[in-house]
Length: 281
Image (cartoon, rainbow, N blue to C red; front, top):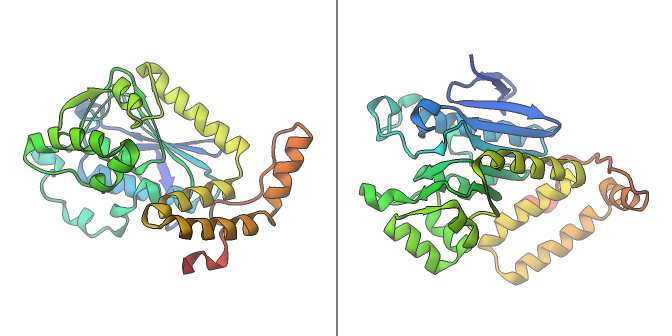
């Protein structure tokens, strides 16, 4: 029996290829096929989508961390027959939650890339907000070396994260590089010894969960991702409206009071709270 979580529909879900654990407003999601170096099967992809949807729906969760059971983060798509690499089983094709990605979660999602990450093992973390990586991890967008092409919006996201030239190099060549290089070009925020990656990511997550307003984080994240499709003038217009909306909320007063009183903040806002006009943007 694997660790259980609550799906976004409120029912209990027993996952087979991931583990889900909660600790003080932080949810840890672990890819859990260590014998296959956490290679991505259709089941794992569907379970991840369900876990992301469940985390989004749970206002008690303020930050999500995604990692892999050692010795790898994710070795790419499972290309074995039982991994269903080339054809999704009917259950996965019919599951509307399968497409729910980390960038859709209304709270920060941190990737703790604690080992090798190949193919989808690297494109999936592009959907996260922040990435920590093992210095000596082997990384590769290996798609062209397998006769296919990158997915999950990689051609859109990667140039915006690391710049066009670096993105062209990595996506076209499919070459292998290490975590130190990933941090040097901005693909990861930090490169650390493999044994320290998860602790660093969890420490960062708990700091956000404790010190940052959940409503503010959700608003900032949503605008960051929305801004990828907007021009500067539109982003400024939305920022100004959001600043007025959020500045009138209890957490804005609490943020000032806790700072002036030199104490930990007591946030009451939820990640799901947003202005009524947000849908109209």
